[in-house]
Image (tube, rainbow, N blue to C red):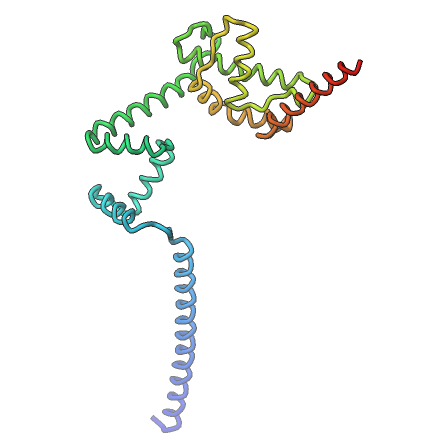
Length: 245
C-alpha cells in the first residue's frame, strides 16, 4: 500500500478510535451518574433507627435468628402485630405478662390470639345482624347492649340538632355519654345502664359518624368544659337578679 494511503487509513482509524473513545468516556460518565443516583435513592429509602440500646438490638437479632427469618421479615412481623394486637400496658401489667410468658409462653400466646380473634369475629357478626330483630330489653346480651349504646348516641345527636344554645350541646366522649346515660336513668329508673366496655365499642364503631356530627356543630374537645362554665355563669347571674328583685 502506498505510504500516503497508509497514512490516510491511519488517520481514519485514529478518527474512528477517537470517536469511539469519546462515546466510551461519555458512556462511563452516564453510568457513573446513574449509579450515583441509585445509591442516593437507596440511601434515602434506607431504614435508620437511632437511639436504640444495644440490649434491644441484640434481642431483636436473637429473636430473628431463632425464628429463622431475616431481620426485615421480623420487623414487618412486629409492625403487623403492633397494628393488630397492640394494647398499652402499664408497668405492673407488663410484669404480669412477662411472668406468665416465662411459665407458659405457648399457652398464653394461643389464648391471646384465640381471644382477640373471637372478639373481632363477634364485632363483625354484630354488624351483620338485622337490628330490627334485636330486643334491647335483654340484659345479658352483647347484641342488645351494643344496640342500647347506639340508641343513646343517636339521642345525643338529636339533642344537639334540636337545642338552640351552644352551651347546651354535648361533645360526645366516654364521660359525657355516661353522664347523659345517668341523667336518663334518673328520668326513667327502669333504663338499663350502659357498660364502659360496651360504650368503648360503640364509640370506636361510630367514630367517623361522631366526628362528622362534631364538625357539623363546631364542637371540639374543650367544648364540654366551656359549656359547663357558661351554664354556671348564667345560673349565677339569674340568682343575682333574683336577689335584687
